[in-house]
Image 1 (cartoon, rainbow, N blue to C red):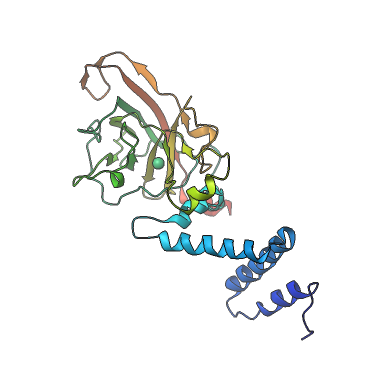
Image 2: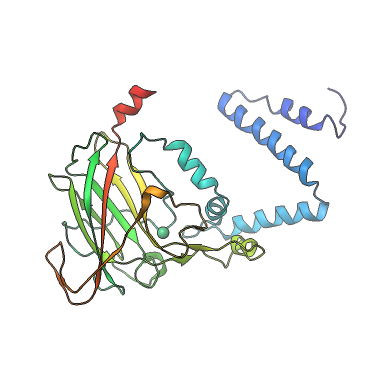
Length: 292
Ligand SMILES: [Fe+2]
């Protein structure tokens, strides 16, 4: 092996990290060395700056618990989470696009009948979401599961409330004609957690730390690719600056204000409420396999 110079060090490190039997890990590690060296050559950090970076990473790890994942948040705000999501969910034209799941999903939500209220007792303006679940061929999908979660009308998820019962989440099932009816409240925009290392970094930028109002969905039906996505409120002040890059054009929907009266689920609502219509489109797994 030649002795080290500034000029040959990157090539030596890449060559050394070829010594991995697993071909995928070898590819990952040699690319990591290559790009990390390129980053250091471009930035030319001082020892103090390099230590500051290591200290930031150390403190980011120390903040992580079962309930808090500061590294995922870092990945989200850098756009990396959405890039990984996009690479792994290249769907057919017309299929509902995906977005990141985010940190607030809770497994095992109660199953509610179509039209039932998943926001019982929660603050907020009533909202009814109606639509269908279909395949890319337009055929309705019966019995698709819609796992739904969102903030209440004060911008808080279940994890942020001291509640014992499920809060602002439910599972619905599409009917024989593919239709579903969800009663909830209008979600509102919220800030990412700003009291950790990601917030510390964000405060040194002029980047918005807000997410536009949205409802989360995880759709599943046998034989179809599952879809984890959000519906965003058109006109939201943060719609163009979502801090985690989650907004895709096809996922922006109108929240249409309605006068007090009878809602599509049969409820009499004695205050103004909002109607959202959306048709989800799932791609068959076989289609993807045939196209590959
Ligand atoms: Fe969210």
